[in-house]
Image 1 (cartoon, rainbow, N blue to C red):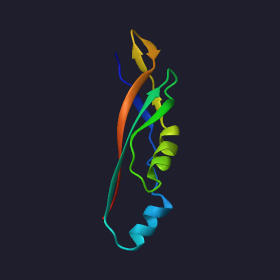
Image 2: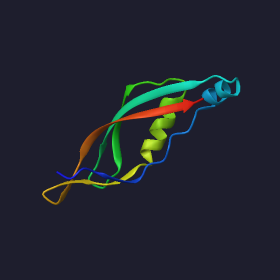
Image 3: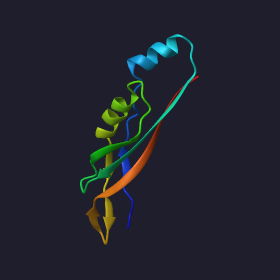
Amino acid sequence: MKQPIPKYQPEAEFSNEVRRLRLKGQKLDFAVFVSFVFDTNGKPQDVCLMQSAGHGLDANADKAIERYRFEPATMDGKPVAVRIFVQGNFRAY
């Protein structure tokens, strides 16, 4: 099986809550874990939050994932849907 190949993977943005914390000079390090299916067209479907980062970051990660575009995975030369797991990191020092 050939794995999906990234074509477009935008970064998730900081939430307003995290921006306020950054303005106070706090060092921030959050992670969100999600799984989703890349369909046979290379678009994400069925996004599932596995571990929350909180602070409004989960929704921002979801918005970024919705814009992901990949060349689909293939098996025997035919596009197939695959579920992947992703860790999204939010850091500000």
